[in-house]
Length: 406
Image (cartoon, rainbow, N blue to C red; front, side, top):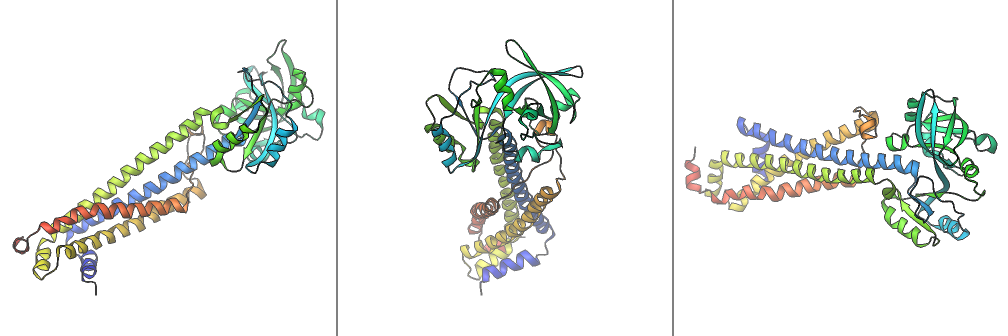
């Protein structure tokens, strides 16, 4: 029989000392809350990054290819992609899809309101999956009738609210050029991406509108929008695409095109690390305090065990077993609390956010089993290593003085 393990079990389960019981419960609660907060922190940060990245890349793509020049305006220089460029995109295993587009600045004047927007022209190859998921009213542009498609437009809920528009309404859009040109459009759909910079900056229309306004040929486009399969490989894929481009073309990733949002997301990682370290320190301090108090309260027992011939290491093992038992209970309760709240939020969206400030209307949660497992393993290892220090106090206790201690 493992004597140390048996004694540790009796101390942990059948202890009748009121003060030590209180300290033990506080220590368990500290580990429980620390682990639960760490699980929720990692889950929320993962959720934020994934949801906001999907919002931005769903509308703007992951990589865009455009003509290399000194033009810094919203309106891009037209080009006709060579067959080699198109074949390279088709055969690239990292590319999910690609689609041509062009942009042109414009001003909407309706209902005594004026709003500047960026007209994003698309064609029949456009992937509507993301916009359809965020469509609030109406429908997407129908490219079956090319003449009718040039009269249709989709706007964001932000723009609709500012201009007091709804699906079915018509308005005149003035395109910024010399001389200015005007076109009449009908709102066929209203969507909400949830990212203010996108919602207030863009509207969707037919690419042929821009071609006619700018006197482009039917094959000319402003840029190619590319969606890749694995966003984690964004830099590598963007660099790979750039190598195979024509000499007059340039590629740019969405993180370069929209740096403010992605810089903010990267700062969230720093906040997470700081929070994890603080929570780990809180849990460890609670366990060290509990172990020291248990050792001091059991001074007489330590003296008796040493007098009966138990080694210092044997007595240390008793308290380490006890500490690991308490950490185990804290981990179990912490996982139940953290994962329980995470799943509750994931399926009910109970906790809400101000979408204008956070780009999301609720607190997002995304947990990975490997991350939860790693948090548990790290907590156990750190607690075990740190708790070895106060247990060394046992070797300093003299059996004679300990037996007389009251």
